[in-house]
Amino acid sequence: MNQDSAFVGIDVSKSTLDSFVSTTGQVEQFLNTHDDIQRLTKYLKAQTPALVVLEATGGFERLAAAELSASGLPVVIVNPRQVRDFAKATGQLAKTDALDARVIAEFAQAVKPAIRELPDEHARELADLLVRRRQIIDMLVAEQSRLKQAMFKALQQDIKAHVVWLQKRLKNTDDDLHDAIKASPIWKANYDLLREVKGVGDVLALSLLAMLPELGKVNRKQVAALVGVAPYNCDSGIFKGRRRIWGGRAELRSVLYMATLSSKSHNPVIEQFYNHLLAAGKSKKVALVACMRKLLTILNAMIRDQKHFAEMA
View 1 (spheres, one colour):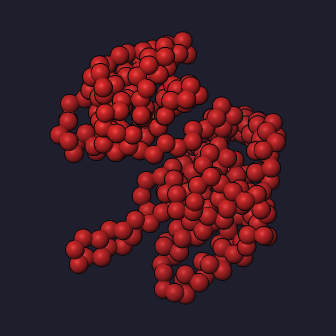
View 2: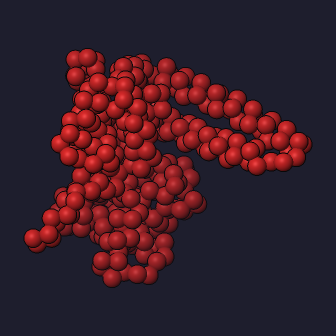
View 3: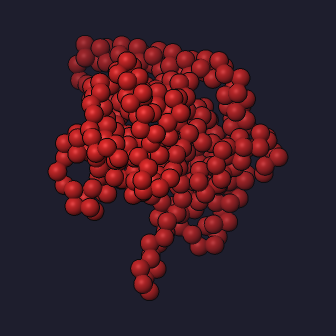
C-alpha cells in the first residue's frame, strides 16, 4: 500500500452510495440496492483500490460492505466520529454527500485503518434479532412504568394486554435466536463453550458471536480494544493522568458489563481477581473494568484454542 494506490471513500445513505476514488478524483453515485451495488463492485474492481472505506450508518452500509467484501475488495467500516474529527482537523467543515465521500477517501489514505473481518449473513441475522430483543425489552420496561401510573381500569387493562403480547414476542425472539445458533454446528460449539463460564448468560454468548466476529482470531489487546475495555494513557509532560477506556462497540460493552457484575459474585476466577484489585487499592469502578477485560480475554482464548473453561482457569 503506497501513496499512489487508489483509496476509495463511500458516503452511505438510505437510498444512495456516493463513491470517491483518490486516483481519478471523481465522484460516482449509485443506488443503495443490490443491482446497483453490483455495478459499484465492477466499477471499483477496475480501480484496484488499496482500501475501500465506508462509515457505519445505522445499518444502511451493511449490504454494500458485504457485497464489496465478498468480491475480494479490501473493505473497512469505520466510526463516523473518526472521519468527522479528521475533517475538522484538516479544516474541511462543509458537508455534502460528495464532499463526505472525498473526506472518507482522504481519511483512508492518511490513516489506513486496519481491515477487520466483517460479519457474515448468519451473524448479521443474529445481530438483528438481538437488536429486536433489546427493543422489545425497552418497550416492556416503558409499558410496565406506564402501568404503575395508570389510574383508570380500562387503561390498565389495555396496558396489561400489551405487556402480555410483548412478553410473547420476547419469547418468540429468544426462540429464534436459539434456532439460529442450532443451525450452525460451529456456532453451536462456540456457544456451548462460552456458556460454560459462570456469569456468561445467553445474551452475552449470543452478542459475542453476532457482534464480535474477531473473537478467537485476535490477541488479548486487540479484542479489548475492539470492545472498548482497553485502557489508554492520558499523559502530558510531567502530568500523569488516569488511564481511561475509549471507543469500541458500546452495545457489546454494555452486555459484558452486566455479565461481569454477575461474574464477580459467582465466578471464582473473576471474584478472586476483583477482590485482589480492591485489596491493592483500586477503586470499584477500575476493578470492574479490569474484570471485564479479564473475562473477555478468557473467552477470547477459549474460542481461539477451543478449550473448556476448566482448562483455562
